[in-house]
Amino acid sequence: MKILSHIPLISACITLGFAVQANAIDGDATRGQAAAAVCTACHQADGSGMYMPGGESWPRLAGLDAAYIYKQLKDFNEGTRKNASMAPFAAMLNDQQMRDVSVYYSEMPATAGKGGESADEEMLKWGETLAIHGDWSRYIPSCQSCHGPDNLGAGEHFPAIAGQHSGYIEAQLLAWQKETRQNDPQHLMLAIAERLSPYDIQAVSAWLSMQPSQ
Amino acid sequence: MLNTKVIFSASFLVLAFSQAAHTAEPRFPVNFPEPKEGQYVHVPPTLQDLEEASIHPELKRVIRRGYDLFTNTQQLKGENVFNDMNCSSCHLGAGAQPFSAPVWPAAVVLPNFRPKNQQVNSLEERIAGCFSYSMNGKPPEYGSDNMVALTAYHQWLAKGVPIYQPGNSLYGRGYPIDEPEQEPSYARGKELYEANCSICHADDGAGLAVRDESQFPALWGDGSYNWGAGIIRIFTMAGFIHHNMPLGQPHSMDVQESWDLAAYINSQERPQDPRYTGDVRETRELYLETFHKDTYYGLEKEGRLMGDHMDLGRKDFLKPDVLRARTFE
Image 1 (cartoon, each protein chain N blue to C red):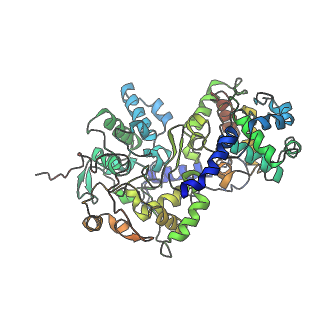
Image 2 (image 1 turned 45 degrees about the vertical axis):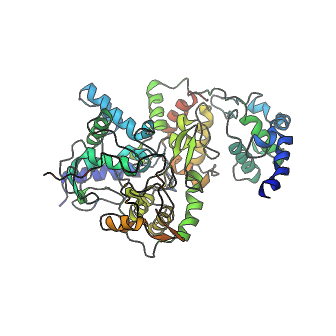
Image 3 (image 1 turned 90 degrees about the vertical axis):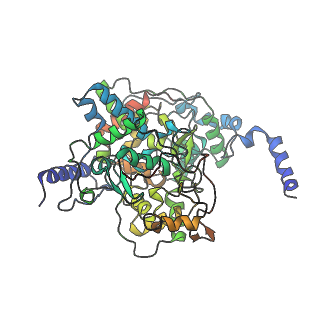
């Protein structure tokens, strides 16, 4: 009886195929590609975003976790994450479109980060120390203790930061310090961000941007 | 009276933790207790200090290997480690962090009599205990390269500390915690767990693996510590949580909450105690005074008799051979 009752569900899965089994957030990459037309001006057709020296860098989305992207879009629309450039674009997407574009970008091959090239050797070495070992004398655990092996992400809550543009990482850490970004679960990031010095932020952002993104 | 070492190191600590990166009051302040009069405060050397130290390069290499084994113990998976833990899962800051059971005290109080096994233990034997219980595994051979690398790392962290300090005078040793006001509660613990812990450790306690690498340690089940591990004692887990969890937010769980969480987590099933006789109630009695009086092993919790099984986790033996009695006869 138990087995029989699952048959309609199984055949539904087979019929819908890829779209159903591909992801946990129920999005479709093909539909996502169409909906992402509003995203490409900044995030680019290949999802690589753009590093802007001295300006607002647009994050690389290619290869990020779909559920993480979806949550950020939802937060922009619900006002729990605020960004003047992003808000009007997020508002153009309904819930299904947010799911679809999230899956679309998550399935793209991750592109390389930019922005660390001008950092000197000493700064990069300090950035590496923070990212891999942390600085426990100031109660700063390493980035990878949450962001996963090689800082390539861990689950839906801890995004990949290796190979992200330094300007974007820097802006986010500063936003946590100024409390203009607060949508991290349990403020796990805020607690660390507020202990970082301006030099720490520059160093860790520069080093991470130069690491392999996949 | 405080000695100079205490005064110097204590002010260093306070300074280090109070250095705000920006002017606003921190929302997650780090407030470790002030050292008590007469306590010995030690700030272990860092990896940078190791690079700069004037010791033989070969010793540096071995200490670095010890660090590497300590922070990535999973490289010994299937050989010495049979669960998803690293040494640094419970000893934060690579074993140097106060109130996170820093490991340098072991290097200065051992060899010593250890109540848990009722005999004098060397540092290698103490580490063998961690592998047998906390890692649900089989220790590296005594005197092996990996064992020597691990002990060298412990000893390096203890650099400059006089040997045979009285253990209870060491600032930040273990996971000290006050008694709770109320009896620890499984139900309150469950609620707290789901709100504060499951984001990393998962609702089923299995933690998280990323690309087959253990990212967040398992708190129960086959991937976790067994029924004989120190942290299965409720007060030990409560102290660990209070001072260290969630990561980066020490003392955000108050004393009562930490005990409640410990009660919940340590009421979950896990691999068998390697000292199991075949009868859980008998094993509890046998090690009651020296260990199990602080655990739920062999007791009924939530309608189940805890530890009443022959589940060895991912290993195929109960007790590693190297755990043996010493008599000095």
